[in-house]
Image (tube, each protein chain N blue to C red):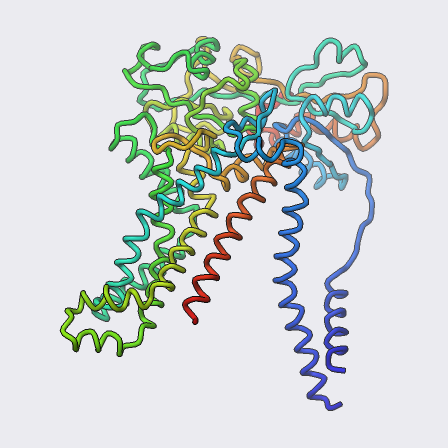
Amino acid sequence: MKKILALIAASLVICASMSGCGASKSSVSTDGSTSMEKVIGVLGETFENDTGISVTYNPTGSGSGIKAVASGTCDIGLSSRKLKDEEKAEGLTETILAYDGIAIIVHPENPVEDLDVETIAKIYTGEIKNWKELGGNDAEIVLIGREAGSGTRDGFESVTKTSDKCKYRQELTSTGDVITTVSQNPNAIGYASTASVKDTVKAVKVGGVAPSEETIKDGSYVVQRPFVLVTKSDKKLSQSAQKFFDYATSPKASEAIKSAGVVPAN
Amino acid sequence: MTKNKIIESVIHGVFLILGLVTVGCVFLITIYLVISGIPAIKEIGLIDFIFGTEWASTAAEPRYGILPFILTSIYGTAGAIVIGVPIGFFTAVYLSKIAKPKIKSFMESAVSLLAGIPSVVYGLVGMLVLVPGIRKLFNIPDGASLFAAIIVLAIMILPSIIKVSMTALEAVPKEYEDASLALGATPVETYFRVSVPAAKSGIAAAVVLGVGRAIGEAMAVMMVSGNVPNMPSLFQSVRFLTTAVASEMSYSSGLQQQALFSIALVLFLFIMLINATLNFFLKKERD
């Protein structure tokens, strides 16, 4: 009897702890670039606060996102590169949402001021090993990077064409860690989103151009890539998706986009 | 049936559930790890996975060899034990046998505080003080290395070693020590010839506990070890089993993610082994 009562009590508690709910609302599905997680997250949140329409995001990578929108499994594809011509020929349209600028950072005491993309690539692939070769101090260059899968790493390696070839000394898991480490080591070089760079480190010029909102937007600062919304040219978006698209590309969204650490295009 | 009995049964039931929650969690985690860890091992091949020396999970041709992580975890833990155990052991002997009550209570609370410091704080201090310090001291390009991780881990395992050893040493019957002293042994001889041997399985348990703590630590070592999947070497940037999972999980997908679960499974097996050893020593201590 005692045992049965105990079991009943047990099952009651379990039942009480389970409560189901699930009302489906209209939502916008996005799919693609893992690097755009933050910006889509912020936009989705502000958009849902304003309209009540939720935005789902599936981090699969730019390639899969573009395929997904072409096959119609999502409303808006997210790509952190421009569309190729053959993708455009398949009936896809690109709309640039924002630019992600990547600053190349060194210790403030490092005399090196200016590097070009080829030199940066040579540094990161281990071809240039000493700051002396670049007019700096006689010291080994310490390469700081991000972990495999990071959007910033992907962006940096694709711009400098060094994918899978970088000989990192440290692979850190956040922008803040990279900045702190570079600020601690006079011989270190690292990369971080331009929006997060602080005075503790020095962002070098790339090909004579210093990273800033203007130089990133007009394309003269080259270590950058676009964040692109991909849609179908011939098919109209659903009502809620169109609303989100209009919001994301309007100047209203620029504050939210900035808070995600990238430069808004509109 | 009286009212009291009903209340008793209800309370028993509630306690039963609470107990089952704990057991359920362990089972859930175990089953989940096994189910999600097996597919990648199958796909990669057990030998290639465990004994592969190269890890490049996002390369065009991904390679998933975790030998560097396994060796790093073993070396790192062994290093922490080599540095941490002597310090912890002698501190425990001092505190439990020699120290004056005032000093003892002060040092004991310091040790407790050390145990309470979150691992991210160890990591932060390591990153800002230890890593640049090692760079300058050994005149190497960068201080983030296996050595830095060993130092941090050695400090982190001190509290568990000191506290468990102290408990074991204090449980040694006073008569043993009195007898030794009465036979003419000096106090120090008594501590090391009588008290320590009597408490040896408790001290062994303390060491095993330290091993468990060191091998499972992720946050602090992630901040000081550099995280590059090199084969371990004292002043090279290395990646541990724990940090391999933690550093790539957030953006991973597909086989890469499954492989991370497999790493977690390997780590889990290590921890189980350590736990079994711990239980063995604790059981010996009780007998």
